[in-house]
Image (cartoon, rainbow, N blue to C red):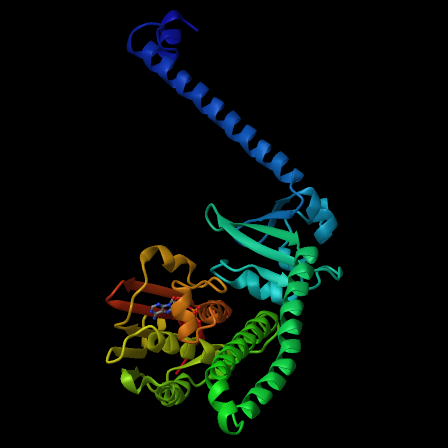
Length: 375
Ligand code: ADP
């Protein structure tokens, strides 16, 4: 090769070419460094995930297994050769296959057995990078058993308290029919005792509702719930709640039903109306609406009552949380109503929204997703 030829093929080591070649090689070195760093980070991530006690399986957009950590081998029975296989071909449980088909993985899937192991597992899918998924499986057997013991204890204790209370209430009623002077003397104490025993009965009933909702939520079959019919009955009951003093307006879309569980939903609708009546002075308007829009079905209860200060709103659904303890007692509240509401809504994939201004009134709205609406 002559000098000219060589010059034509390789740029001179000075001037524009040299500058360009310097920049290109610098960029290339930076890219290599970046690629090394990316590789290092991904290796580091994989190494960390190996130490996590939960099974972690990475799936591509078509659910082919890309990689998995060590606990996946013992928990799910995965082996090296399962890489590149579809996860549905390995975990074949129908509930899992259905779960995998979802587009929104907000809720976890609880299974009472998995790959032949009779334990309780929580499965959760986390979407990441262009439809890739991470399947995370936790063994929650101990946690689940503890929660079950707590649920059983509350249910049994409430149930056991029912009978002695019924006996006490019976005697109280008898004593109210005492003859002559005795009746005058005992009138006020007996009325107090009756009020308190009624309160105790309401608390027991609410605790039983809560614990039955907790244990049924995993097993109960959904059915069609005729919401307009329930609201029609509530409009009658609301009047019997001593709410003649309030102006209650019902705006109900006919034939708008839900796929769900009747008793918990009845509790939701009734509790919100009872609260609006309980915490509104006489003469106030209470508006109840049941309607559909493109987001889903909505149940709204709006009152012109006492209102709730902003700092209390996030805590309203806690068990026995009351903004004003004395008022709640006087009005017969158990402090469990909104926990029941929250629980029942969760069971239906629905959410509760609360807006309130002290002295002006409160607005409670339950948002039900479109996929459980029946028309
Ligand atoms: P309670 O049985 O005491 O009414 P809830 O769980 O139903 O218990 O409600 C919790 C607390 O939230 C109540 O004690 C009350 O202070 C407040 N609250 C609920 N609904 C309303 C409302 N519509 N207006 C004002 N305060 C309310």
